[in-house]
Length: 414
View: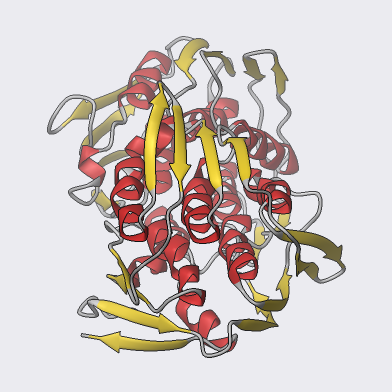
């Protein structure tokens, strides 16, 4: 496993361009992290199976068991946001911090909402950003909240999961365009699995006061991780790839990759063990709204630059506040492929592919796991160097090893 922080880059090549194999994908950290928080809120022992090996999930498991006063969420946005709500409503006195980049990522929308509900929270640095000091919960706050819904669905999910513990429950009115709606629906579905009912009508979600119940839950494989394999199949000369552990009826919004890739050269067949992927001809111009699946955008940008497909994209607002400014990072990195990514009108981005003229492509990752995995499949066209490859530990620690299983040659550089 590539985990050394001293490893500066990997260079990938593939001798044949043909892929064959069955891949056991990592478990969904989105499902796993929600299940861990809900299980902790229940106060009972639940059986959680196939928990993600992703660093974010392993970190959350450790922190939920920690008695330390200072809690380091590292670079995990979901962990930071979910634990902020968890510690606030359970009245725990903690200092919650993270990496330098994490302390630049806004959290004011969530913190101010929790304050309205009765939490006492201080900003220890710049207002609106971690680190945070959690000073307990009075329980005498409001029941009805209005929250902006166009920034991060993780704020909303964090509030929903603690909603049943509030003395009068929670009524959440979402203001503006709802981003990543499937992630909100995933949260509500998991809450229901653990015995909590809620209603989602128009832009209002109502969660009555009630108690979570212990349950058994098996985490599905990660559709976000699957997206990189769709890209690999689309770029391969030939491919016979089976991805294990995926469900046709999934809680995960990134299942949308099935429909997107049907237009970009990959047909999906659902089988008992997961999905089988088959090559087909791609369309030459695609328009897609990523509001419900923003984590797929990097994969699609890199792939379309490689395929020579023009793509117009909306729904990318949340990419500015991820591990890096993902829009800016993509704009920079596609230049090496003679492609351009431009905002042609407010909120609308167009990738214009060019002709790749370099014999070897090199991509920076900006401390962002998805940058590494989105651009790696291009090694089916030309040798690809990926800098700081250990970033994949955040969500898919075995990514490089899985590529070797289907014939990639990977040279490591310290």
